[in-house]
Length: 114
Ligand code: 5GP
Ligand code: ZN
Image (cartoon, rainbow, N blue to C red):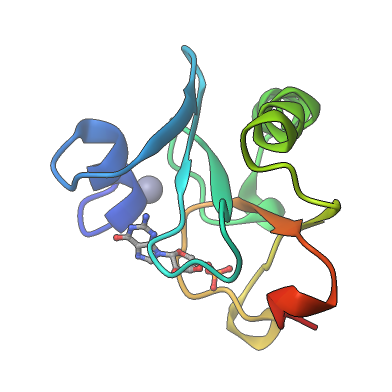
C-alpha cells in the first residue's frame, strides 16, 4: 500500500469501485471515466509505479489475467473488439502512478473513440 495512491485505496476499499474481477494478486474495476461502455482497468494489488519498476513476476500475474477478463467483458458487453493499452510516465499519458492496463471495448464507429 502506497499512501496517497488512489488505486491502493481502491484495493483497500477506502475508495469505492465497480469490481470486474479479483483474485489474490490482481484487481480489475471499471474506469471512473468510461471511454466506452465497460472500460476496465486491471492492476496488481501490490503497489508498483509503472512498467519500469515492475518485477517480472508481478507483470506476469497482471498480464496473464487479461485474456480471461477480456473474454468476460466480451460476454458481458458484446463489443465488436477491444483495445488494450498501458501508459507509462506522464509523457505517455500516465496520470495514476500505480501500474494499470486499460481494457477498452470497441463497438464500431458509433462508439466515437478513435
Ligand atoms: P492513465 O491516464 O494513468 O493511463 O489512466 C488512469 C485512469 O484511472 C483514467 O482513465 C481515470 O479515469 C481512472 N481513474 C482515476 N481515478 C479513478 C478513481 O478514483 N476510480 C476509478 N474507477 N478510476 C479512476
Ligand atoms: Zn498504489
